[in-house]
Length: 91
Image (cartoon, helix red, strand yellow):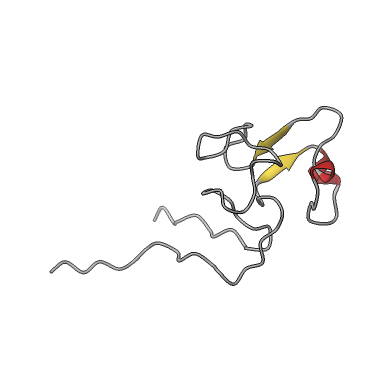
């Protein structure tokens, strides 16, 4: 029997879910000193938002990134209160 260690991080069920994914960005986001709670906290006159992971308005799951879409329940959603795991070491 081949026993390999589990390298996946288990889902965190003890983290409070924020209204929007931690990776949802906009120009206005960088002026905030609090976690965005409404779509108005993210949207500015340009109406442009994007995913921090992909750097485009499409999330890693291939769907549109925006306040109406990047919410708890989406597969790529991450709470703003859950620290992002460090990328795996290349060495």
